Length: 170
Image 1 (tube, rainbow, N blue to C red):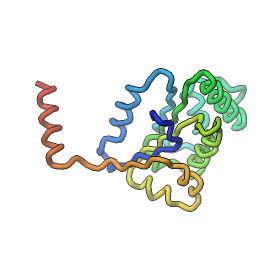
Image 2 (image 1 turned 90 degrees about the vertical axis):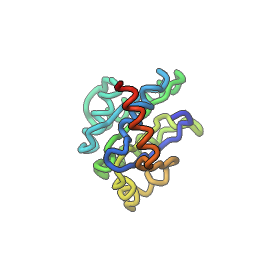
Image 3 (image 1 turned 120 degrees about the vertical axis):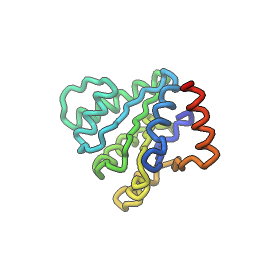
């Protein structure tokens, strides 16, 4: 987030803490970063765009796809000109249909010089890595600049975590 890395992929097993980590990080970001959080990934491209417009609290002229995309692009440009940034976070991204991935890739095309106008974070289970190897997603996969797999805690970390939770709870 701090380096405006474009596409980021975060993977980990069920219960590894991906959503918790995202919520923690998003709770710490400055007000100059506007976030749209997509939690329901069973969306076609139209529904994905409608959800993004709603998350960014935009009011497009209509719900036609071209109007939704235009409203998002205008918003990204406007925020960039104010020194603000926009981030789209897609949790459970392994369930996103191919057309949803393609829609996100198209939204990421808008750049100002060498800077992205929107940063996209894909978080999901290990199947997300497999999905990203699909040849149909090769253009999107090439844009992922950071890929991190959240591993389970080791034995010592589990002990420290349990000790911490016990101290916090009294």
